Length: 248
Image (cartoon, rainbow, N blue to C red; front, side):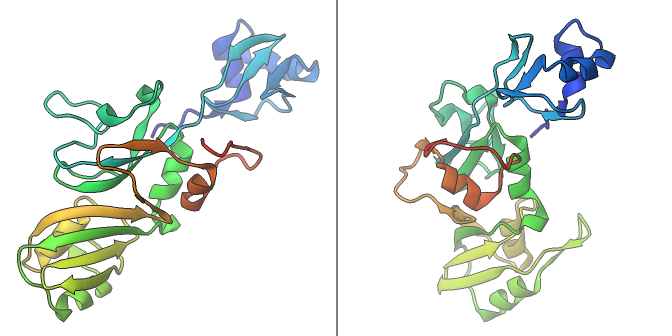
């Protein structure tokens, strides 16, 4: 999720023959346009999604913003490339999928909702702890559950390796061996480690939803673009003036 945003004067220096010191004059002469509008400041932030022209010549055409979801199958790694296993990106059908990164990974044996984007700022807003983006998982356990597990999840658990205590999580028991876990964090193997701390082992882990977004009727192994409203329900965009079509 590298952030490729930069100041306009630095971009012009890197993509033209003009030195950085000349950009202020170029702006004053209205020779630079960003997204079809005259540039207004040397400190104006531009991103890979910005269309930038200088004296009518296009220096950057601007990437298409991509926001996608995948119903991840078991046996697929949450990676964009892997020498040994089939990757989640291999299942994506889009001509610009090479631009995508994964937003919140699932391990190779876990299934369910996996998000992709080429918008690092949007992805970070989903991942930041302050966003408190709720993630819901369906779990199947090796040993029967009881009410003490519900209390332990609600209290939070101490992970000695990181020297942290997890945020309270909700555990709803459906049968002695199945439950739903809802949490707002994404620590490494968090759900499995929380059950392991109680002496239990997760046999199956399926991510049902992230924020207000669920898999719906998306078939296993299938992917699709998110709508603008679905993107906004997960995190705001970095540009308040950005307008998006019904399907992003």
